[in-house]
Length: 130
Image (cartoon, rainbow, N blue to C red):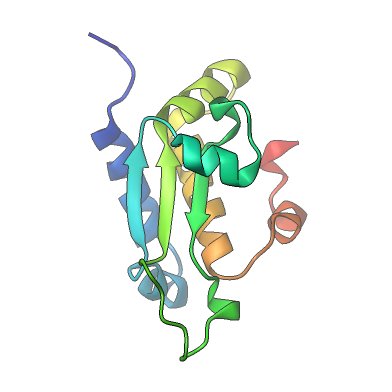
């Protein structure tokens, strides 16, 4: 049996993080489907041109709010994916961050994409990855 935190633990931290977002963001975040999985699937990796699944800790799959139109007819709901194994791998490699803080960070990062922020926008205010 693994000592690593379960998918349920990751979901608990993700939901707590979403609930703690400032009010205008939290309300819109509840419209996004949250999925917690051990690994990204091959189609996701192929679509993003990623060879190593450990390189993808989370993914926003949808149309950012800044690009949505009332005429959009989405085939599926906007979804934030959080990937347990890549996050655990990064946590072990870093050795200097709290796992729950790392999970929360990935959740906020992916929801920032939902709100229309690019990776460059996020990096300007969030030095986490440096």
